[in-house]
Length: 333
Figure 1 (cartoon, rainbow, N blue to C red):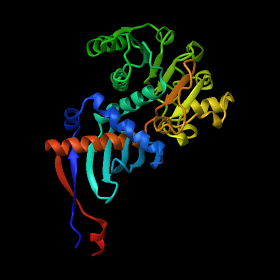
Figure 2 (figure 1 turned 30 degrees about the vertical axis):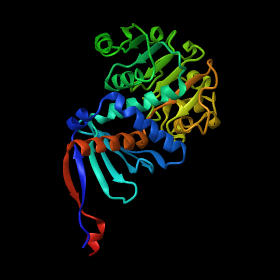
Figure 3 (figure 1 turned 135 degrees about the vertical axis):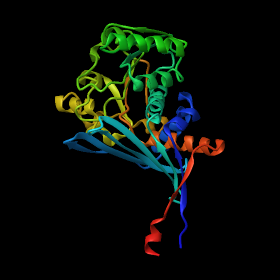
Figure 4 (figure 1 turned 180 degrees about the vertical axis):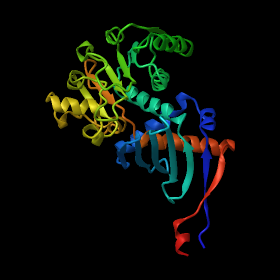
């Protein structure tokens, strides 16, 4: 009779204690490098419920060199009006389960790391000014990780609620070496910025693409649904557009889809996937005047890479609870 496998269960609190923001960047970068060299990954699949309103989402990736595969499954909305994230992680050689992670605290950390990899791959080296649109948990994750790959002197943050942007600026002033200030409009943040990060759930563009100066890099991470479009068609049209996965561009990348519908770009406007740039199988920024966009809607690439890093740390430190998993063959014995 086949014996049970064991997997390590990690709680959200245990995950928070295992690694800092900076620790996620190297494994996520390596995950995208593997994708650029052919590792399998698929965009999200989302099922929507109207009554009660909510969505069930999942996506998958295999990282052969990391030795792990898996994905994210999460439910958001419904009657609980909240979200819950689960990350199952499997061994890429044996197929046996390695871990099951509570993804609540992991989510902004791995997403922030993906944004940082995008900035590192596409932004100029001499950037000084960072603009942030949004002041929630995802914006915090983006800023902390992005500051680990570039030395910013100034950060300007805008969100519609004054108290939110001011408390964000105060918190980030303590956390970063840069001077962080709240500003009264998205235009004030974007004008003169070298890097722009949008971390919102907006269904309309959050700034005017004509304000972008040559050489600016934009990371947009609120583009995970056809109706979510933080960036206007002008920004898309002016940019070298780099999504995390090429197939996402026409399925759930709302800003790109809207630019297609407006007729300002066609599908050939997708410059490359992020992994192709990281792996140097496609060029990224080619001169200091390029405007670049990284569309970070979320993939299992950063999820599996981050999950495996946490699994290894937990194993080394004796953290987590082992849980048994029966093999399917047992049902046939």
